[in-house]
Image (cartoon, rainbow, N blue to C red; front, side, top):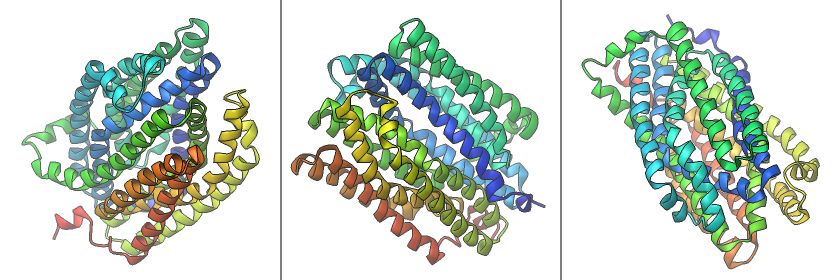
Length: 445
C-alpha cells in the first residue's frame, strides 16, 4: 500500500516554494550585503558561484537519480528499496563532496583564472572560493538528505531548516561584512557555518522521523544494480544540468573578457532579481516530479500525464503575474543593489528582454522535472546539447560581441535557448513517450 493519494501538487509545492525562495535568498543576501561594501566584491562572489555550479555537477547525478528512484519505489510500495537508495545517496554524496572540497582548496585560483577572472576580482573570488569550496561536502550531504525527506512527502521539514539557515546567514553576513569589515571572507564563513547547522538539523530529522541509521546495513552486499540505476537516470540528468551550467560559465567568461565592468555588474544584479521570477516554476516542477514519480511507480500513467499538464499551466499563469510585476518595478529593483545610473539602466532594459526568457524557462523547469519523475531523462539532455551551445553560447558571442549588442544581445540569445527547448519539452510530454521509462516497472517485469 502506498501513500500516493495523500500527496497533492499544492501540498508538496508550497513548502518547496518557500524553501526555494529562502535558499535563493542565501545567495541574494551575500550579494546584497557585499553590494553595500563593494560592487566588485559582489561580482567576485557571483563569479565564484559560477565555478562551484559546474564542478559540483557530480552531486546532481546522485540527487537527481535518488529523487526519481525513491519516489517510484515508494509509489510501488517498496519501502526497503527506497531506504537502500537513501543510504546509497548519502554515502556517495559524502564521498564525492569531500573530493570536490579538496579540489577547490587546492586549485581555486586556476579554476577562476580559467573562466577569466583577473586582478582584484581574482583575489576576491579566490578568498571566497577557498572557504566555501572547502566546505562544499556539507552542501552535498545536505542535498542528499533533503531529497530523501522531500520524496517522502515531508516538504515542510526542509523548508523550516532553510528558514533557520537563512536567518543565521543573514545575521552572520551583517556581523562579519558590515560589522567586522571581513569582506568576501566574512560572507564565505557565514555561508559555511549556516550549511553546517543545516546538515546537523536535517540529519536529526531524517534519522528520527523518516529512516533509521540501520538503512546503511542495506548496502551489504553492495547494491551495484542500484548504482547502475542511479547512473542510468542521474548521468543524463546531470549532463543536462552540466551543459547548462558550463554554457553559463562560458557566457560569464565572454562577459569578463569582452564586455564592460558595468555590464558584468548589471548581469550579476539582474540574475539575482530574476531568481525570484522563476522560483514558482522551480517549486511546482519539483512537486510535480515527486508526485509523478509516485504515480508512475504505482502504474497510474494517465493521472501522471494530467498532473504534468496542470503543473505546467499553473506555473505559466503565476510566471505571467510575477514577470509583469517585475517589469513595472524594474528601476526600483535595480536601485536596491546600486546607485550607478548606467548599471540601473542596463539592468532595467535587460529585465524587459527577460520576459520571453521566463516563459521558456518556466516550461523547461516544470516539464523537464515531470519527464524526470517518469524516468525520461535522455530526451531533455539531447535537446540541451543543441540548444545550450548553439543558441545560448554561440548566439551570445555572435549577438553580444560580433554584432556589438553587448549584454542585450546576450539576453536575447539566452531567451532563444529557453523558448526553443520549452517548445520541444511540450511536444515530448504530449507524445507520452515517457510512459515506459519507469525503472520500477523494469525490475518487476
